[in-house]
Image (cartoon, rainbow over all chains, first blue to last red; front, side, top):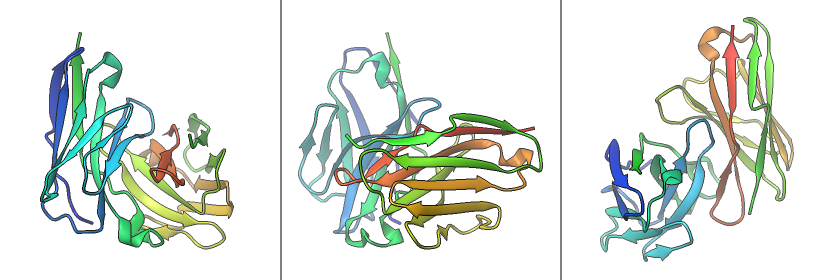
Length: 115
Length: 114
């Protein structure tokens, strides 16, 4: 599985934008970039995913570098409820029907949101 | 959206007993489900992949005789921790492939073995 690298922790202030970086220099052409987040004592929650183009949804935006070796999750206005561990994960889109389609979690980034 | 229900949310059992954890896809059929384990302050570790109607595929280092996985229907997978010991105490999480973003997770089961 291609690896991702994220900062261990980041801090933000409430109602300010947050940019969470992720490096994935060994990404392959069929790898999708997924972001999940996990609140304490809960299962992970899907945030957003993309392949090549930038993506927006109601939760966040995903900016993908042109060479796809890095991406940034953008929370436009952080709230206290956004405090969580954010995971950037690569999923092999070419192996959907095999075990290669599983999600392998790294250490993620612990986001702290200050009131 | 897709929902995965995991039960129980918490369980305490005595050392040497077995515990079953259920994972149900409520509004979609899940041919593939995944089981993870998470120790405090650590990330999720994939234990096994279960496919409906066939044997589970276990990750390296996970004892298949200790962590029994059954995926007998398109909406239910179960994980049974057999002969549990205190070191098996952990947060167990299941997930299922759905049709949209791809993966929906259960809310997790906190297992404490005393």
